[in-house]
Length: 179
Ligand SMILES: CC(C)(COP(=O)(O)OP(=O)(O)OC[C@H]1O[C@@H](n2cnc3c(N)ncnc32)[C@H](O)[C@@H]1OP(=O)(O)O)[C@@H](O)C(=O)NCCC(=O)NCCS
Image (cartoon, rainbow, N blue to C red; front, top):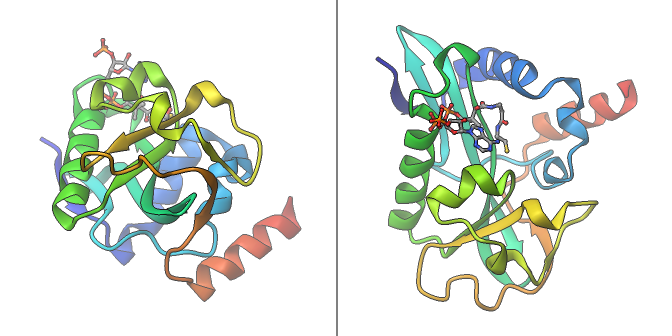
């Protein structure tokens, strides 16, 4: 039975492998990645799921300025293929949303399939006046308010505001050189 935990430093290799398997080698070319590279995820909002000491799911949220509104960007979410369609992705999402609301965050945006994220309350309207620093399919750009009107004033460019990690920044530079 899988359970949700906060991500630890020792999770990094298994997490990277899970993401490579789920998204392939192009995962670093996504526009969302521009808001994550060189940054640390939001405190308490880097989650994993474990089953018998094996990492079987990952989900992270990131601090952003959503066109003047402090908010979070969600992603990536991935579940090990052997553990899919058993509700684990949904559990990770609900856990993260609840935790983010408890911390006092105002809203979350993400780029993902509406058909999946709609069930958690994500809607196009909350991201409709926002821009990302790269190409994005508008149909996949979604937002969720954690407080009434939490994203009401969100208009303009989304920028990363999370703590900078020199190690993450170095890795991003190396990836770009290798690409
Ligand atoms: C998307 C993902 C995280 C869902 O994890 P999960 O543990 O299987 O999720 P749940 O068990 O809560 O929900 C599964 C249901 O969501 C559906 N679903 C999964 N991905 C979907 C998608 N992109 N669009 C619509 N529905 C989707 C499944 O068909 C399944 O439906 P069912 O219950 O009728 O069989 C997992 O499939 C995954 O890791 N995929 C690869 C990475 C990825 O695409 N991440 C999301 C980025 S947008």
